[in-house]
Image (cartoon, rainbow, N blue to C red; front, side):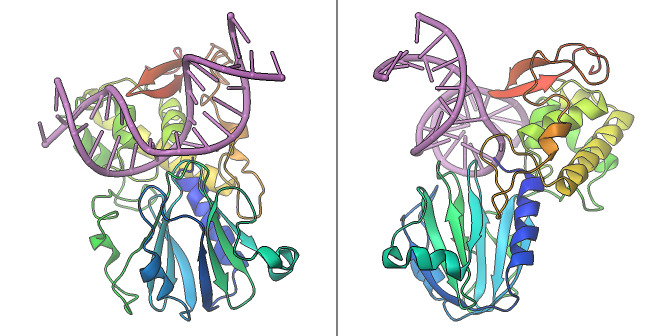
Length: 288
DNA sequence: CAACCCACCTGACTGC
DNA sequence: TGCAGTCAGGTGGGTT
């Protein structure tokens, strides 16, 4: 579900809602595992620690506490929401039960707020990401983060870098930009949209792109992600911000999920084809 | 090794 | 109405 813009919006919304420095009062686990087992015992040691801030690396959310870092990946359908004390009063007799189907974990805070993780398909991840008692552990050593490429909005991601990465690569350019070892945060929606903006067909071989094309593509990736962040991300079906509101960027999609509809630029019908098993949308007239 | 296929899960939607 | 089939924003393990 969520790509970089959606995860970044969740991060911002949560951080804006939470009182800084609030302590973790407890955890409620309604599920032993998501994609992988949840390290309940490790997480429970964070009770009493204060939550200092929330950051993001790639599509991972990182909840920083005095006692370590909670790492969260939303998979396809993961959502975080905040319940306030008055919401919980209504369900206080069922405090040990989830308030919605597919609620898997609840983090109770001393402020009275509760962070709730919900994930119907359970493709998400919840992990503990640092050594006990050490909040400055080098996150790049974590097995889940170790192999990640650069952030697309950082300086080290540009056309030159992308050109270097495409050399000798026989995969499609779309698969390449969705490869999190090459560049993080780009999923199916934004890969399609960035390739449209760059005028490149998604099935083009990566090694066939020249320098200026890589320059255009890197620029398009950065641009589309930045715009999507500003619009609150894309809501196709499941994605919700922590306050349950939808994103707005789906209105700006030129090609994604628009098979048969008109290209906003030339009015040709948008086509869909499968690339590595993923639906890929493009304009046969504007993209070459 | 690079590049693919598929499983992992649930729910929504389609067509018969 | 129901039921089978298809598809979905991601990732990683196994296989070509």
